[in-house]
Length: 346
Image (cartoon, rainbow, N blue to C red; front, side, top):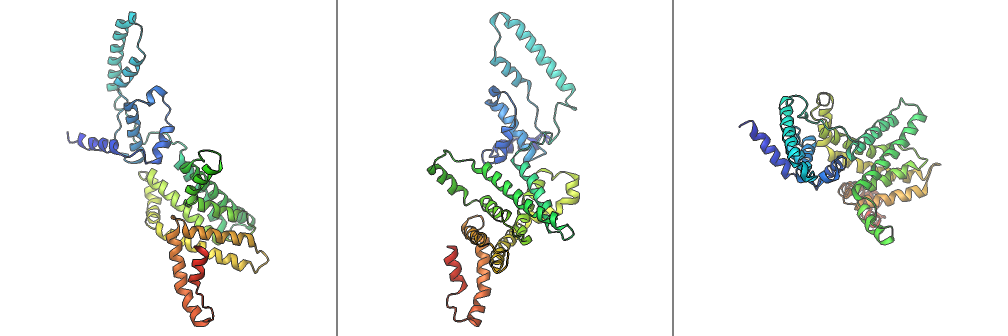
């Protein structure tokens, strides 16, 4: 009795889990291949919800196989003709007895699937992990000084291109497409998308992938984003792996506990890039349009809910550092940098 209590509590927790608000459940259920008439049955849905809960939430949950009652119920949905009712009843009872006997004989081998026995499907999280892992590796190649210049430049642009594709795919997975192809529906859809962090990231990448400038400093936000996505996927899906526990667990725990630090680092790098682009206007590689567009992007980052707190904090720190210098060495500048910042970024 004591051995059944933990599993009973786990099944209760699995039944009470909020599947509707977990985007992984929609991807998982869409990849389950079952007949349409069985997809509407509550016992079938409950079974696959338990398998989902076992795979993503609690690997220790033991999911029992579909009982023979389910198969008999599906057989009753297509009832045989009346003249063969007695023979069908006999064959069904014999089949039930045979299936119960065979299940009792093979209960220790192949009837009960082991934990995490579901095949790896290319769902939204797996695709994002693959792309971001590839982006992180390519970004490292782009910044290593031992890599040849032509390979480094190509890896630099591939890093932005891969992150742009990942961000656009994430936007499509979360927000879909406009309800109708008209101006009003597109405006409603765009207003919900423009404040998303993935939209800002995609515009950031497209700004640099189309530029002839090669600023390796711009890879810092890309690498931070890829590192966060890869770490979350590894901790969620490979936490029980021996290889993960031996080589990757400590690094992944550090990344997940310092996501705020990485976001602050990304925001400071993004602001620093804005000033680097201004300095580049005095060189032969100047690009006035790119500089203007990037400062418009900084304005969006300053106001977007996903990045506003980090950028506002960084700008406040810049103001506390620069304003005393202006008042001491250039008092004729009566307008402090904070006022210029508020005028430009409001």
